[in-house]
Image: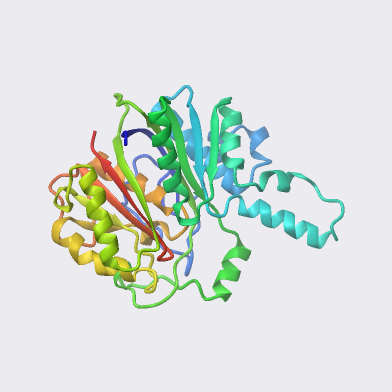
Length: 352
């Protein structure tokens, strides 16, 4: 499969990732059992007349996409591909509550119009005046991975520049209901990869990337490959598929300088990753990221933004590290994500 070169990135997360100079120096902890995204002043990225009608997910997605496009200095894109698990959840909730509270009468259409999952991609297209391919994937834990796979297929068909991204938001009611269902737990001092308790720290955020078919002077890193694995039975299945994936790119685990692993802090979901960890540490330098960004359907997008930063800075911050050893160089970064112990994926990035 053809490579994709990352020419621009934009990320809004529970950390100060909106600041291009931030590199994991100061970390904002979870608010008990969940994270909130740190939102910028949107007036810098979105016209005020458009801003007042947008929900939070739309604002975050449009702003992150705008940052990525500005960084890449892209005048136009050939496609916009978005991944999301819950979509514009706030507007969906607002419309449903209005139905209940108003006895199904006197409903305004704005929340309904803005509630569809493809609203983020369509708003970016309207602002950019992009009338080309525009698609949104709602594949649960594979949502962002699907955008990358689609982008690479578009490159094989001759497209040159594609904007991809993942976006997720939560609401107070969403947090409350999941807390009642005992799906959350408060963050503890125990390292995330050693957790022995159930529950995650749910989060939200967005990351967008301008991908190019060919390398340019703007290129920050390349996406060499992406593979998804649904519901593997054992950790051995994961390792076998991982070795086969790396072999496709003429690599082994020894060649991987940093492996970013998607531990979620839930002992049930992380069980197979814990069994894989010794093999990773033996050959590579293991690291993690969800204690920084929290858990959500498209957390792989934050992981990819992190991988680009590691390659750019040629340094692994101690706050991310699992292994005691440090990489002498960072040429290849592998992301192993898992969502709810069912959706697993491998994403390989390399230095240009």
